[in-house]
Image (cartoon, rainbow, N blue to C red):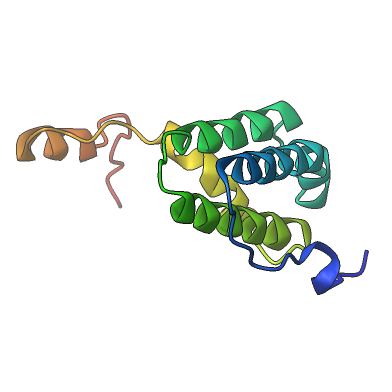
Length: 130
């Protein structure tokens, strides 16, 4: 598949009303939902499409309480850019998998000793060298 950079390009636009911003947001959300299976196949991920959709939904819900219309326009621009970069394969697999990295990180230790004890590897036995 050849990459056509202008395939998903969008002009920057300012929303004149909340209704227009909402419809733009819904349109972007639908584009992401429709693109989830294509993202999985493009990057050959071992993640189902519904997991990608859940991550996208999480990002949209995280920003649902933004009350400044100019901030919403910036978020929409960034969302369109991210979609374009993802579908044109301008990202690497690690960039896409980074969406899921936050869930897999272990909790950070509270103090130095806990961090020190967690870094020890008692499961490996040291073999003496002859």
